[in-house]
Each structure stands twice: as structure tokens, then as C-alpha cells.
Length: 598
Image (cartoon, rainbow, N blue to C red; front, side, top):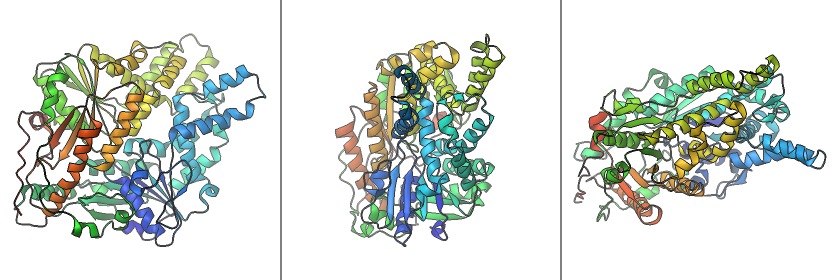
């Protein structure tokens, strides 16, 4: 891993969901710490799995990681940060101001925007306040998937600009006094991000076209912010042990990676790069992190015999009759980034449309491309769209000014315009668009590919807070917003598909998401295990080892986590277009498992 040579003080790991950001950030932290450096490893992902990867329970403060001297870890918990931020703002006034005034302040700081700004405040402190991390030589940030991270890294500039232009001292966050006290830190954060001697952006990608494209887009976007010191890691490049082509699955896996690297965008090609070989075992635990880039001892000891596969779950087609039965409603594909939510949502939408039903396929993920998944194919009854944050924000601002601003005087209108310039307006606008999309399921099917888990959880958790924001700014509650939670909680209207890969992190992240949904009184309809090698006949020893590993997690989903489960085998040709997606829901498309003899 070349980025370890002359490593800068700050390293940001980002990339498309599921590319291995947490594993490689953790491996970097372990190897730097074991070289004698003092290292703080920080997750900014609301759905962080850092605890599982390093094998230590982490909180909002630096926690020593056993077995690695000099290494500390922490998670930035948005809710915990919001509570602390709220108390810091309101606490000094308890017992000083009348109770009614304190209650009013608490209400002002209960909005969804407070959650985002509080998490951002914690992040900025680590980057812009040298005293906060003075005891460490390196601070390594494991970030959420790209869309969330781009927003995080643009916020220092966005909030600095908003505060400089704000004249009223109020916003969707309530009084800005708390933020203005941090303005110097935000400016130092912006400076640190653009200082090539202090900060390196590590773009992590799989050897896949979509991951390369997203890495290239992120590279361009962050160069615009001045983040110019960038490094590319290609994680999980597969090599067959037998180059004769005797195992068609292994051969296809190797060729797919090679083709993706050859076709990667010039922006990505130009970056200095490291390549990390594919590992059947994943990168969990300190010992595995130490061995990144080196043959692990576990490889030699692992079982190469065919996995004892007696049966495996039915395919995606087994869910279709029950999904189609209501004739309308909302189907949500949820899960960790990179597990194939877009593919599953697209395949279900195509299958329902092929049954003669009216279907709209859309996405709440700014990094998803459902249109590309259809490859420009047309299908009667199927429409395709996306919730565009930029367009939704423009539409929302225009509507609020036209309605709530219609009767305001000049001073009042200026205050409203200032409020709407807040970076939080985008979150409110996207939430409202999500509610509108769900409402459209009353007279047809709406299939929604959602953003990665953390962002989706925040979206759902914040439903009540967003209610308040929409009402505050527009003076009215749209029907779609008012009925959002009842619709999501109605099992005859909303069907949630939890999509996962047969690996530890995606399964356990989906289990956490299922628990969050149940707390919100939303019961998932089924689990979909995607890209499984279990149904395939393989002879490559590393793929056989992988089957043993997958079996453990498929059985965990089947026996402990799900009421219904469907399994999609890994595809030699990536499923795109109507024909390719139709294969995922075709009857008897699962190939029989035929273990190859030793």
C-alpha cells in the first residue's frame, strides 16, 4: 500500500458503498500504528461497522484498541453528537431564562438539521482544531459512501459562506450563535482539506466499472474544493490459480476485473495507485488487517473441499407473486452500499411491468444510476426517474417563496430567503420528494432504490423532525408528508427488501437496519442475498473457500434473521437491460450446484 509511504497527518478513505473503505482505512491505521506512529481512526459513517472490523466496541471518544499499541478508534454518532450539541447550546440558559423560553430553545434545536450540523461539528473539530488531536501523529477518517461524504466535505465551505452572508442570526437551527463560535474552526477545516502536505484523499474502488466511475467523479468534485492530494486503491483484484480456463466462474471473475481496469476513466488512471488482491475471507479482525497485501496464514489452513451444500434458498422469482398481489404500493430496496440494491430494485420493477402492471422505478441515492441499469431499454408500463437533490432543492425554495413568502414584507422575505440558503434545505427538500414518491404508490407500483443504510436510517429517523421543518417553512403540511409514516408502516402498502451479500458486514449491517425499521414499526418483507457463489460449480480453491464462508452467513440469514429469503447467484455477465434483469427473476434460473471433484 503505497499511500503508507510518507503518509500525511490526515487521510480520508472514501468511495462507492461496499468497496472496502473501512477495511482499508483500518489496515492503514493498524500498519501505521505498528510502525510506531500514534493513530486515531475515526468513522463518520452513520452506519459504521468499524467496531466489527477492529473487534472493539467504540464510542464518541477515542478508545484504545487492544493488541495494537498507539491505535485508538472512535465513531461519530450523529444522534449522540446532536444531544451533546443541543445541551451545549441550551444548558447554560437553564435556571436563568424562564422555562417557556428554554423550552422554545429546545424546540429550535430539535430539528433534523441539528443532527447533521452536530455530526459535522464533531468532524470539523477533529480536522480544524489542532488541540483536539494533538496527541496523535495521524487521523484516519473512514467515511460514509461517496454521496454522504461529498456533502460532509463541502459543508465547511457551505456553512462558512452561509454564516458570512447571514444577517439575521437565525436559521433552521435556531440561533446561529453556537455555529459562529465555531467559524474559525470551520475555516481551518477548509484550509486543512486543501493542504496537500496535511491531507490525502484515498479513493477506494473495486475493479468494477461503476466503482471506477464514481471514484473519478469524486476525484473531480473534490479537486474543485481544493483537495488535490489523491491516491487510488483498487481493492479485491481476483487472479485465477489456473489460467487454462478450467473454471469458467474464476475465469470470468478475473476477466471482468481486468476489463474494468483497462477501461477506467482517465481521471482515475492518472492517480497514483495501489492494488490489493482479492481475499476469500474478507478483512475482519486485527490479524487480517495486518496481512493486507500479504498471503494470510489462514489461506494455507482453510478448507478447500467442496462446501456441504445440501440446498439453498429459492431465487428472486419466489417473491414476485406476493409482491404483485396488491396491484399497487411501494417496494423499497435497502441495505449497505455495494450490495446490489439498484440491481434488485430494477429486476423487480422489470418483472412487475412484464406482468402488465404500472411501475415507476426511482432512487433516493444520489450516486445510483437506475437509468444506466436499464441500458436505455423501454418496457410498456415502466417509467424510470430519480430524486435529484439539486433540482428538488431549487423547486422547494421556489415553492416556499411563492407560498409562505407571498404575504411577507421586505424584511420578512429577506429572513425567509436567508433561511432557505441554509445547507440543510437540501435535506428537507429530498425528504419531501421521498414522501411524494411514496404517496404515488396509491395508484401504481413505486420501486425505490434507496441510499446506503446510514443515510436511509437518518431519513426515516428524522421523519418527525422533517415534518416540523416542512411545516415551519411552508406553513402547511403536504398530504404526502403527513401520511408518510402510516404508509411506510402499512405492510399491505410498503414492502421492504433487505438486500445483502453473503458476508459478515453486509449481513450484520442489514440486521441493524432491520432492528431500526422495527423500532419505527416497519416490518421488512424479505431478505435478498445477492451475488452468491453457493449455487455455482467452482474448482478454484479460493472460490471453494469462499463458498464455505458464504454458507455460514446464508444460514444465519435463513435461520436467525429473516422470515423470507431469496438468493441470487453471482452472474458471469453483469445483469443490465431488460433482458439481463429478467434473468434474475426467471423461473429455474438458479443453476444446480454441482460440486467439482477434487
